[in-house]
Image (tube, rainbow, N blue to C red; front, side):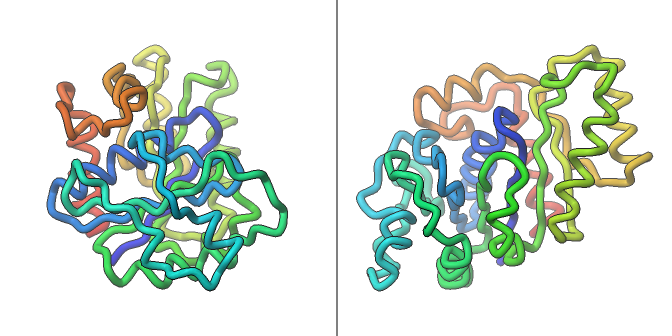
Length: 240
């Protein structure tokens, strides 16, 4: 059993990667649970086009409910289960990430892989949940930063997320719409100068976006570029 936290800034594509990597791991035979830990703006359900009746928010409002109601088996892919938030739930400060750790502790023994989609940005409020992780994977979209400041910004972002306390820390560069020479320099900067292991670089793939619009993970209907398939293979090789 391995618990992996997927973190990143808004727009980095971390939720889409969580959904697609999790789906591919399940298709590889690993019993997988995907958890939407964004209590403020949960949207993992949109990646699968589902609206479960029982959600994390319902549990946090009523901790005495039957926990077995909360996991949603995704019928299109064997071995894939979802633990989702309610996108329509109001933001309540009393909702506790500490209570969310109870769910992770309860469900994780039943799964080979638990992937947790964290709130966008530096998830300070979610620190109790961070402590449940075996690995943290930071998703970075280099296209959102001016090239002249790119290395400084990436350095700052990695240091801040490392400060959350998970030593087994990895980076994915996602949909980098920057010149090839700048991308190669950034990959070298992360892996050699910052000495942070790079899980991979995911090129921009419009089919991933199409899968999000359709509510169907890419590997369920055709990963033509093989990007997600290769990345999930890397996950399996390193983490399992």
